[in-house]
Image (tube, rainbow, N blue to C red; front, side, top):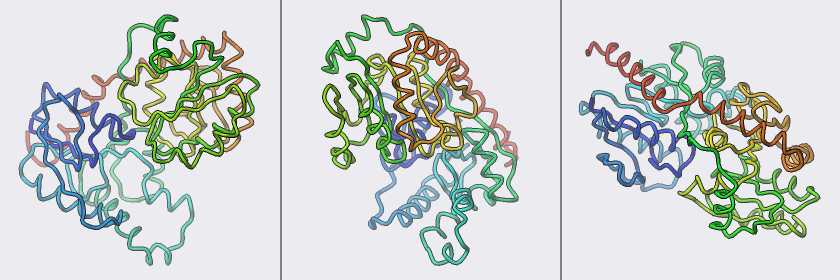
Length: 375
């Protein structure tokens, strides 16, 4: 099968949607002839062909999206058995919806019609979304049940679509004490750290770094916070870092490729997100036996399938740094709780396999080809 995978930034160290696209393509590479259509491809050794979309001459976000949309259509027309898009495009055979749609966001914000009409940015995004989900007659895949539900509530005339959550690369062995010590030494951390907390995400504001730093400042013991993600935002948070107090440190590590070392060093992953659909980072942390704290739905749609004090700890308000501090303290002080979260998280993550994800997509591809009258 000749498969075109469309993702503006095809990179494992990008956001969740970008990482999803790369992991899925890697799972399929032995059975499909894969070409990546993107601005940037960062998948060394994968062996994929690359059709590069040139950057837009204008910096405007909505114009750049239309530019990308037009170029992808020219590059893929009539050349592939399946065009699988992970972007908001007006064409393609299969579309994976990773984030809350613009229609659903506007419905949630109760934005008036006049304001919509006066914004060319919104009009372009809404047009692309209507073409993608309603007019293209493509197969639609949602990465969570809640995302599918809210999209259908916001837009009428949609086909049911299919729900396919992400997979995870599951390590067979739990992290040993020796491996944890080695990981901390590699990262230059003191071995007597009372607690090492991880924060992973490129959009620090949306993922809740502000609340996490305020929560860490309240803890009555020493803490090291490791922040993984786009370092360009770090300066904005320096006043909160300076206010952490004695015995506490925050390290902005930037983009990290060796994530297993990060997970091995952690006692806890804190993800107090204000908006997420199915964050892959939570699955990855759970698979590595790291206790996870995250927010409840609707802030994090994935949380609707999780249980508080079962496989995770759930924060009811992403801005409530006092409650978040209490949850962090519970993980640090209650060894039985931390162990239970680690074991239950690993068990939960085992439900998600890239092999299963791949097979589910092959069925979607068959449906897309059948709809076009191709066997």
